[in-house]
Length: 520
Image (cartoon, rainbow, N blue to C red; front, side, top):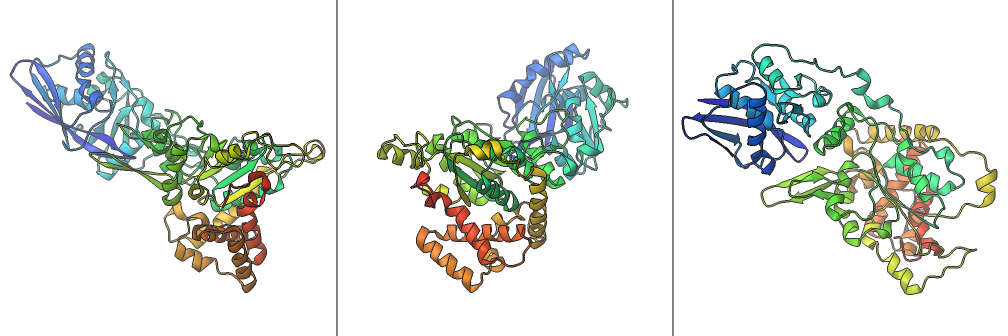
């Protein structure tokens, strides 16, 4: 007696359809699972046996062979529990085949037959739609997530008995939770973050944050402890444009595969803001593992990766940032396969100028030895810093600014300018993929096309390259920042003032004695 049930497995951020084939033979009772199952899948036989028996069904006293096709792809996780149980019951004649052939089934089983949520259901629902199936049978905790995919029916279930009843022609209980319209379109979502109005003084850092948000540029702020670097950084999500629907679906899929999407979340409304501690490992930052999972750079996709006190991170951790900063993705090689994760984020980092933080302060003397300063600043490599578009010095806030100055411009006003600048870029790069429609993502050819300079600006750029020893990458990044500054001013051409500001925002750290040795 044989049966076939459709399920799915995760590969990177995508899912693929898995044929769960069950064969019952009149031999000594036992159960074997083949088709490259991982440990959790091999252990499913005990969960499936108990769930079937405790749900009131008879477990077949036969030799059971379960094949997971395609057999050449490794199957991870517990989502195959439910389809294996359905396959066994179907092979035993307890379930007819009309509905089971048209739906993709996933879910983890408890010993008493409860169906528990699993990760990656959004990707699985996309796979079902692409395969032309009628719908998906999912745990009720994953129902709203699956309901974000158009064109398929979602059948939510709580127990194995409900799955069997529905496959026999009954109705599932409870019904599918409604997905409110506001969860399907995040454009009007409010982002609960620190407001720029709370930042006292720091006009140059505020301007750098606005330019970073408008063009998707990476930002480093170097300054004394307590100057407000971390506070300013946490204002960035509040001035970034809202996620578009394609971006929201992509971010939600990442968090679904990572197991971080809550059952009642629907589409994620806010841009990610990831702030890992400096004790994280390269694997935690970039992703991977024996069962590859997205790392912090992927969890920050379409959002912000904030690294506070950058020199405190191990150099081995920081060096793995080079590929995602340059390519917008990470590639993780394994013996059986290569996994690619998207990682197009805005890097915001902070650093002290020296171990004590007072190097170059006009009022407070620095007590660090020159060798200690050199070692501290050398923790961040030049090639990594070369990939940071904006490098700004942040001074201590003086008393009159802290107590007497009026509130700064609120995030909402800055966000309006950023959105207008982003709209200009969306039009400029309309023929490119949505993820690459910002100035920071321009290719070399696009820099030549969209960043032409007047003779005065050419002379200024030449002088800056000779004075600050800008690399070819640094040259292009200065032009990209200048293009963003012109967009913020809603001007078609890059003028000498735009270029001068771009040069200052990139070389301010190099000029400052506070951060001597750090910068371009």
